[in-house]
Image (cartoon, rainbow, N blue to C red; front, side, top):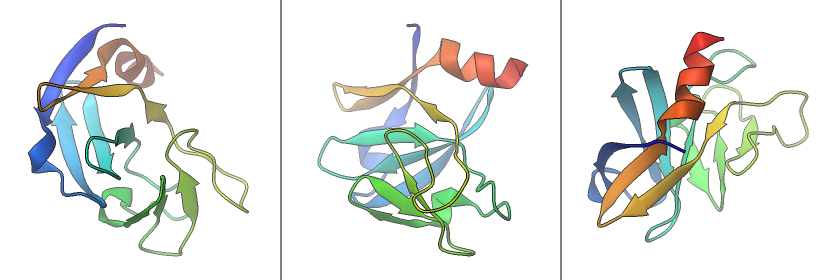
Length: 109
């Protein structure tokens, strides 16, 4: 994996999210716990809702438009036929790092 720094952990509130602009497109970054962070597509496949504005609960996010719920580990919609792209992230020294290769593969598709 090729890790790229996308910002400070403190910039994302616990049980919240932020939209992060990268050179390879925008990514929704979700923080569920003290140092538990996930990254995924910002767009709900149902009606295009902005997931970074959704409700973060457990390891899931609920779309703010029509309440579709996505597992942030897998990207799978719960109880619906749909999924969002997810990207490997890690936290190191208070910074959020994302796997640039996985993100670039999405951009190339």
